[in-house]
Amino acid sequence: MSQLQQQITSFISTAKVDKLSAKNTNNAEESAFTEKNGDKKNIINPAKRLHSCLSSSSDHSICIENELDEIKQSLKNVPKKSDLTEIVTEIFKSLSENLKKQIKKEIMSEVKSEVEKLKTNYDSKISHLHDKLNTIEFENGNLLEKNASLHSDLRKMREVVDENNKKATESVRLGNWNEQYSRKKKCENIPFTRKSK
Image 1 (tube, one colour):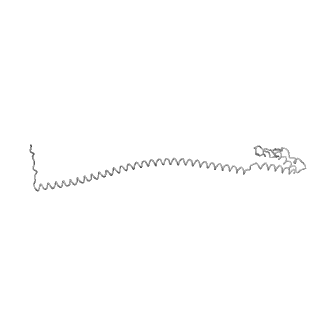
Image 2: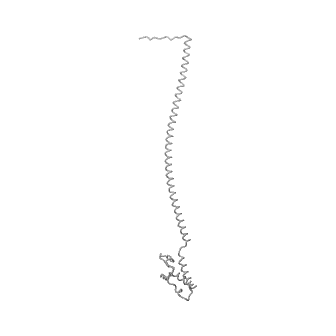
Image 3: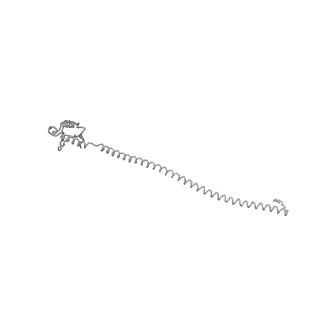
């Protein structure tokens, strides 16, 4: 068992530092084996075992536990799959919301523009039809006046025609009566001669 512990200890101590590194606030890589003492950083050589691990009399399991704790601490800064999934989901959600808003804004702008065009076209056609209607009403008024004038003239002409019919009928009646009277009385027309001066 102690030989197995020594192999694990040597494997952990010789692990590549760049795989266990995490970013600090200055965007510099920080090893999992870095200790902070005030402002100074003391980097423990990961190829060398800790002093407690060199002692043959000490328990190697404590050394392994210490190194495992250091690895756990360094892995706390590494993002998990669930964190990345959540971040990507939030990014896509935010992007989709922004995209929806942008598309809605553009569609509403296009719809407003088309509505304005249709309204302008509609108002123009209504104005044109209103002008035509006014012209037709004016012409209709003139035609009604002419029609009334023609009816008045026609009524006067009918009155004249009726009067002439009455006179013609009376003339025919009088002519017939005169003819009958002259036949009964045997009146003859005497020709008159003019005297010359």
